Length: 88
Image (cartoon, rainbow, N blue to C red; front, side, top):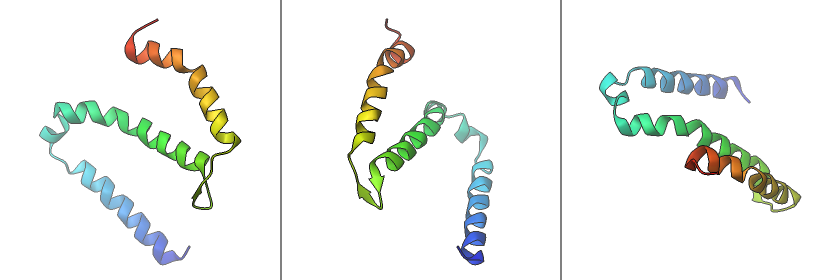
């Protein structure tokens, strides 16, 4: 990576952080924003896990890793239902 690309990426990150801090307070108090913001880290982490698990060299790969994710998902299903749906 060249220094120019690194500096451009750093400036872009700083600009996004500054844009977030510059939002009016009334926009942050909107009920839709209050419901959505806590879900963003979960969605980003899920996307990162899916990308790292199911891709290899820019191609979609379904191998043993997909089976492991399926088993772990099914194993944790009762916890998810209990937490989000209030059942069990």
